[in-house]
Image (cartoon, rainbow, N blue to C red; front, side, top):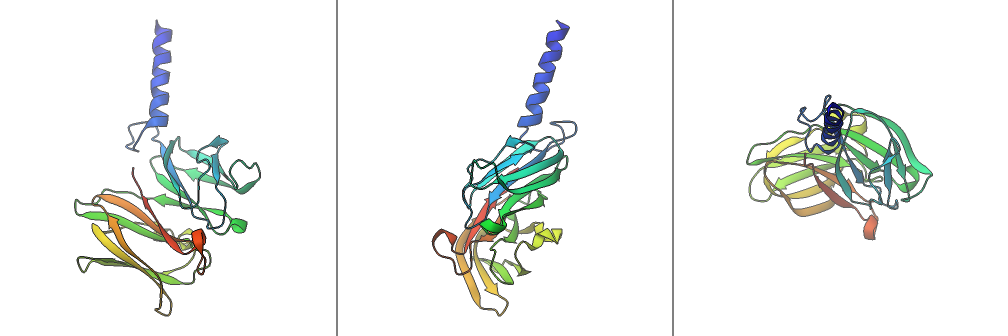
Length: 236
């Protein structure tokens, strides 16, 4: 009888480790880590992401994201296969996912220079009328620029100035979220000389949520490779 009780306990512990939906600290000892995969390379094919030999994101298309995977904290060998199914890897790096922390793994740059940009997602729940927002510059050839988010119904705004490609890689503060009022915003991307590079209207940010907005595509690109924005809701 004791043998069956012990087996049942092991099964329950395994379920908690791999299926916890939030890093509360109570689901495992130590708590899980979580990582999110986003494909932002404009001219790369669909990709796979392999972590320590396990297939996580499969056939992920440009502009798509995976949501969070919850995993035991450890050092992970991350491989990105491009195209999907390939066993010749465009990216092969080691990354540590710490207990109780969230991360995003962005496949960035052009296909011939594909790399993984790994950032920590420092998440918190904003107030009932607020959202948490951050901005990344993942357009490989766009110059030094600023991004202004302006609330369409009030004077509320936030500006991310002087952003360059993948700059949060050398300054982790650029990966932090800012708190702004919930609502509908227009986004204007401007060049260093003040001229408008691209505008986006009607971006809706719902209250008590966290969002990552990123610039993608090529400046001067056309079709699916044209300059565009991506929006991720970082749901815990």
